[in-house]
Length: 101
Image 1 (cartoon, helix red, strand yellow):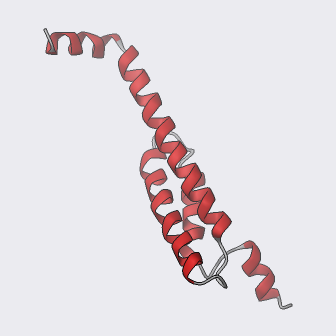
Image 2 (image 1 turned 90 degrees about the horizontal axis):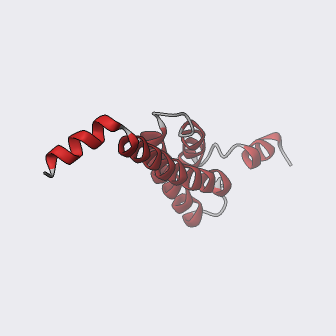
C-alpha cells in the first residue's frame, strides 16, 4: 500500500466536489454565511455523490454526505432563525399590520 492510497482514503483528492462540499458544509455553520455556503455544500455534495456512484474507485462519499446533510440543515435552521427574529420584532409586526389593514 502506498502513501498515496492512504492519503486518498482520508482526503478524497480525486473527488474535489466532495471535498469542497465538506468544507462548505463546515463553513455553513458560521452565522450569516449559512444559507449561501449551505446551498453550495448541498449542490457540490450531490455532485460528489454522483461522481462516486459513476466511479467507485474514487473515494469521498462520506465527505459528500456531510456536505449534503450539514448544508441542508444549516439552510433550514438559519432560515428558521431569521423568520423567528423577523416575526418577534415589534417594528416588523407594526409594518406587517399596517400592510394588511
